[in-house]
Image (tube, helix red, strand yellow):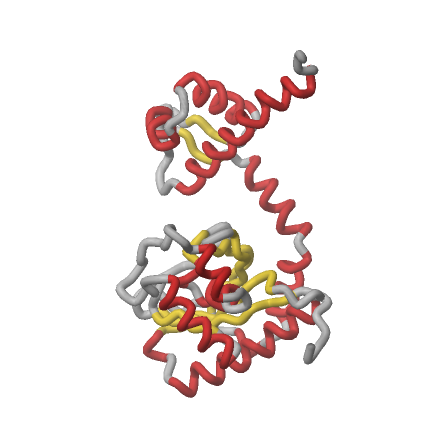
Length: 263
């Protein structure tokens, strides 16, 4: 039976869309603009396909072709990002809560969501204190190494952790980065006991982050909230004090999302 026009369109359009997303992901995550050859070699796609897709992405403002022929992300991406931020209640509630909590001033505070094995930073307030690390919206980091990632992952079962990270453990960022899924489950057991997580230099030497999960009305962890400070400032009492305060703030943010208090 011959395909109808909609089936034919889907058969050609869907792969093209997926390849376009691959190109945008690659270019957006590159520290420097990428050449046409670089895109082809890294993605392993046919030159003809990449040429046509890059041209279309440039026409739509999703990519910019520079004078030297390399590609970088276009400004239209930012309009989509801004629309996402405007439409996300979680971010708006985080920003409102942050403005009303004087105890958070002086700290770097971040909000992330879990995306498979990574966390994506969707909101952040960087303090003036020099941490040697700057968080930014859109940044991705391995979930097992971050305080927010550990906080969210602590709400999952050990079996789910094992499945999620089977055969794809992330490369260490520092010598302190947790080395395996089994070691992570040991950490997560401690997180479940005290309620908050700790990144003790796992993404940046000398920086300590404390995290807590943010839950929606159903009780599901939809985000992670974290406070970052210098390790030299983070004695046991400071960690406990900040950790308990962070749990209060995470509970307040959860309540704003419909989570019942003391549930």
